[in-house]
Amino acid sequence: MPDTPILEISRLQEIFEDDTAGIVELLESAMKTGAGYQAALRAGLAQNVLDDVMRAAHAIKGSAANVGGNEVAVVAARIEDAARAATWDGIPEDADALDAAYQRLREAVAAYRTEVS
Amino acid sequence: LNNPAARAPAAAFKVVVIDDVETNLMLFSKVVAQLPETEAVTFTSSREALNWLGINEAVLIIVDQNMPELSGVEFITQLRDRGNTDTPIVMITGHADRELQRDALKRGASAFLGKPVDPVAFISLARNLIALRGARFDSMAKAEAGRSDSAALAEAIANQERTTLDTLSKIIDLRDARTGDHCRRVGLYAEAIAKKLNLSMIELATLKQASRLHDIGKIAMPDRLLYKAGRLQGDERELAKRHAADGAKMLEDFTSSLMRTAAEIARSHHERFDGSGYPHNMKGDAIPRFSRIVAVADTFSALTSRRPWREAAAVSIAVEQIERESGSGFEPRVVGAFRDAMPELLDIKAEIPDN
Image (cartoon, rainbow over all chains, first blue to last red; front, side):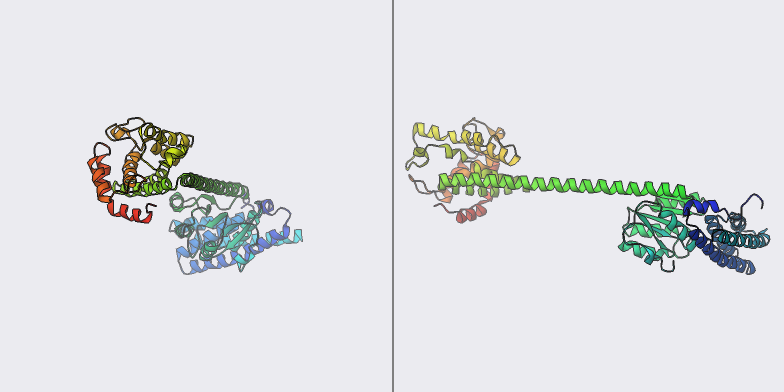
């Protein structure tokens, strides 16, 4: 996803200004919360419960977008849209893409933490 | 954030933020902190937020639509149902659902923001909503203060009027105690008769008070007339008749409704229904309504009181005379009311005896 940044830190800097510790705290909280939603989405997928998949994807989309995790948000939005349309088409593939995007986001967060500490 | 409410600072305007995602609460807290004198009180549970808002004041509420306990719309509905109609509410919606937004507006939402929330848009919206709420409260407070001032002023004027009227009554009493007692009786008689004519409570109170001054003009009468032990003769009678016009003149500069009514009664309580009275030979309905009532009350009080040159007439004699003059001296309807009010009139007579 070359056009979608993994972590758009400028958005958080606009809110937190010089409070880099606050940004790190928020990002780590988002990663922890995200892990819970990821697990919920995977459970929905395993049990073929489209509603659970839709709710988890919706929560991931919102929380990731709020912290500048744009790539994760975009993939989650695709899964949510498919689930809303009551189709499984593309959802398993996008679930994998979501895991990969989350991994990249975690690495970007770790890099940022190192950068500011 | 495990106990979000406990993180609320003590002294600041509170913005309540409700979102089941703690990351979002952290983010909103930071954004809310950019508003002047404002801090966030955060809740992951909408029910806890409802309870908190039941006993605390917030200047703004931010609520996410998608929550497990109560949705944003359900939260807004319950809050407004509990009587909170003033606090502006911004609902955060993850997707632009027009139907949902229309429903939320109907339930009492003030504005919407989409996710991810743009902090600049949020600050701008929050400032405007908080300022609007403040302006509304200021306006309500001013209106309330205005109402209080008006009520206090009206009360002060009413008190002053009562004091003026009591003072004038005392002057009548000190000048001639007999006239003073008569004036008090006439006030009560007039009220009792007027009750039978179904006058309003305000009219009854005005009549009762204002008619106490109907003979105030007598304080300007020369001593030789006022205290004369015998019946007035010729020119004396003509001179005594001036008390009606003199009384009106004494009261004419007052501007209140009560005192203007008192002046009117003083001037016209000796007018007769057939136009043969004084000072202006007014006739029928041209005579002020209150004066037509006072005329009967005044005559009944005068006839049933002792004078140095005669004994007090029996009540039956007084009633007979007044009834005889129904249509000539007095308005027939008032005479009918006078007859109906006789039990009350007798009570008043016993209460203020003729000394």
